[in-house]
Length: 181
Image 1 (tube, rainbow, N blue to C red):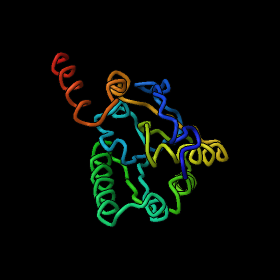
Image 2 (cartoon, helix red, strand yellow):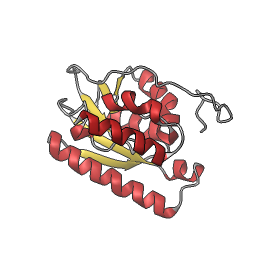
Image 3 (cartoon, rainbow, N blue to C red):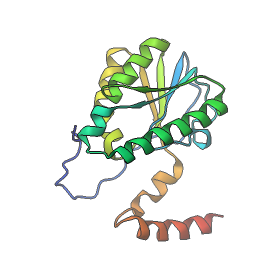
Image 4 (cartoon, rainbow, N blue to C red):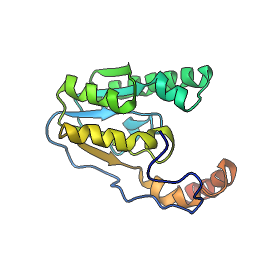
């Protein structure tokens, strides 16, 4: 499941593709997909939307592909459950944490079960969730279901500072955030 968009051997700096930092009201039955890349949707640009269902997906097959340890898998289940609990409380709608063969398969089953017209989510940038996006887009396209991805404004603002590990990034962004306050 390597990312078809990038070559892991290519170390050329990539820019973030443009995405909106807000959404207008989406018509129809809209589902909110939560994934480990952004679990705080209640404080995100999606916080004012009105989903009819919220879901997150786990996959032992995907976890095995990426060689995740039992401890890492358990932590993913914990954080997804936490994110769903907060989102369900914020939006006042039912949530689902389902295991699926792949994230795309889980989303496809959820779309059909809930008769969804559109999905909204925070945009993943890298890693297994971003790697799954082409398959997710293909499944949604087959069902003629729109996918609306957004990103937080600070992701675009601070992405360029992410060049050489967490601590240099934290130093640069901490200074910038302190100046914004």
